[in-house]
Image 1 (cartoon, rainbow, N blue to C red):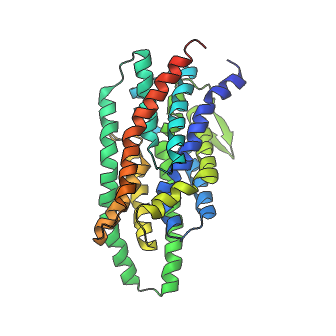
Image 2 (image 1 turned 90 degrees about the vertical axis):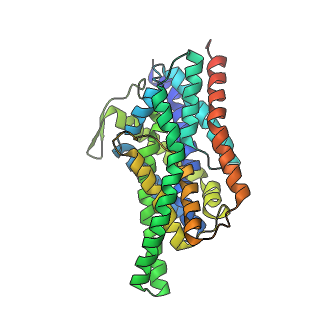
Image 3 (image 1 turned 45 degrees about the vertical axis):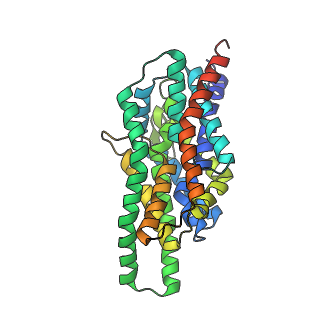
Length: 331
């Protein structure tokens, strides 16, 4: 297979990465932008840089989990599975709903399993599905704890209003950088995991750094995520940052740190090293902040729409995957 054909068949993964960046950047930076502590442009630049670093540095550990769910050996099949997930995410992003890229790619892989009559690893599927429930709960619990810690720290510092504002702006920028790193480390498997078995990359050096063949693949995927953050993430950032629940700068810091830590913890080596939904973690973090404040004025209609998106995402992606594989089976 020539280079042009190979790159074309990987274009759906790049499209998926762009879609993930456009949708999921709001989950780690939306609170900072929605609270007006970080302008969108600055937040997008921070996110795009650190998401690439996380994608390469994480060495794609979570991709091994997805690989056990469905080992796609044919590059053409990987192209269609990634395309189905990307189309699903783009559809919901256009409606300003923060959907789960993890659910989309899992749905796409399950659609491939049905098409090829392949029995996936049901234990892995159970672990991944359990993480869809565990990640928002963990993020919510972290929010409850961090809310008290950060409030106590700010009270002990007893800063002037101007100094506290400046401190929170810097803290949100650093938390956003950590969140983008964690997003790249955890979610790069959603973008390029289906191509690990079939992509013909070799190791190479960049800026005196030696990248393995897998890291080269994930570097390319990281760039795709970064492009989505820079070009099309503003709408979802505002949905998470202000539409679901209005966050003060202090509470925005709590939410960003909670989501970042959740993504990071699920990317660490161990039995729960799985790609999790930053969208679900973000909603859990925001609800955790509301609970810590004793203020439950969450936009319930928006919350129900988000939950509906979570339910429909794997089903939609699975149907798209099966339809595309069936449609192009003779090509």
